[in-house]
Image 1 (cartoon, helix red, strand yellow):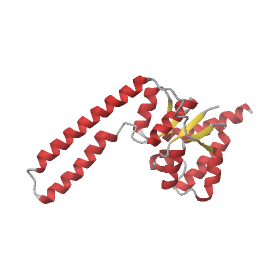
Image 2 (cartoon, one colour; image 1 turned 30 degrees about the vertical axis):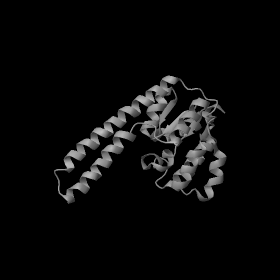
Image 3 (tube, rainbow, N blue to C red; image 1 turned 120 degrees about the vertical axis):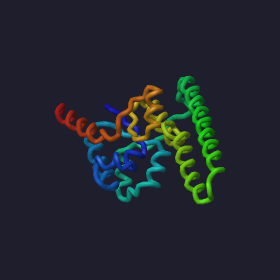
Image 4 (cartoon, rainbow, N blue to C red; image 1 turned 60 degrees about the vertical axis):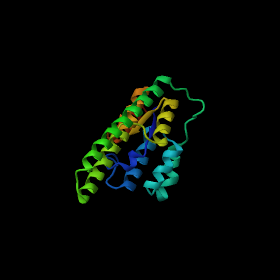
Length: 197
């Protein structure tokens, strides 16, 4: 039986949830219908579920969602992760901080040559490039870490549209799927289950 660990992006990223339905509520409904008939198990860390509830109003679907998707945190105190992963994470963070500093220095030098109106545009560009340098392609929240740890603990498959989470799941040896293919995978599981019954 397949175990899937879900990230909020499955229900909040329009590129993903529209594979289920055009609107979020319909997407959640269709996901639940497919999930119930797939024969797979679905998990979501408590922190991720809290984040999801802030972004998507599940309304009357909440009890069904909690019945289909097991809400549980990873056992953080008993999971052992290779120390090499920690070393790689620290190196990556150091590299990104240095890259961010170089971007800030470059924009600061440029600001000295500009008038007041143009400085605002420069600050906006600085924020965008700085955020990209520090956050893109890395696990940058406790929710990401919870998804990673729970999938590691369960030997499950991470379902996310988050590039950083996908990258680090791969580094740790966790199975990943492209979340845009998730609906098709669920439909295939249902067909396979029907064929073997």
